[in-house]
Amino acid sequence: MVKEQGRKLIAQNRKARHDYAIEDVFEAGLVLTGTEVKSLRAGRASLVDAFAQVKDGEVWLEGVHIPEYTQGTWTNHEPRRSRKLLLHRGEIARLIGRTKETGLTLVPLSLYFSEGRAKVEIALARGRRSYDKRQALAERDAKREIDRAVGRRAKGRTE
Image (cartoon, rainbow, N blue to C red):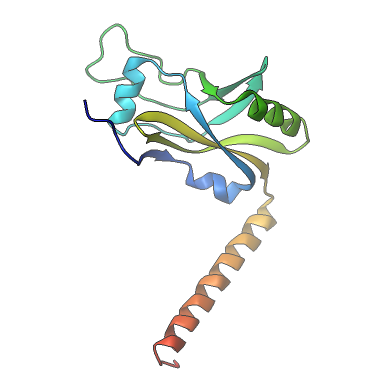
């Protein structure tokens, strides 16, 4: 059997980068059942309303919606069950220490296959207030406008 190469994106949480200030990013494996893997390979998953939490020294992913596999039988999985994340002991200890700080939470950024294995990218994030979001949007728009002006200048146009 041919081994998969590279990274195949399944789902991405675009709103997370807008709603949270990302401080640190971790890659974690997922404990999944067979029908969950087949459903993910079909590209079906949603990270909306998903979060991670530390319980009894283990990290769990909550609220991820992986729909039931259409060709599955009675062995199908629950779409919104809790899924265990696979991290190194040192990473878990760091997460436990950092999540005890006020305002920090664990948010999944993306779900993907890497070398044929399902992975999730989780971020240690701090929630943004509405004025922070507006400021971040204004900075991004200003940077985009500067890049456009530099591009026009490089092409010889001064419009």
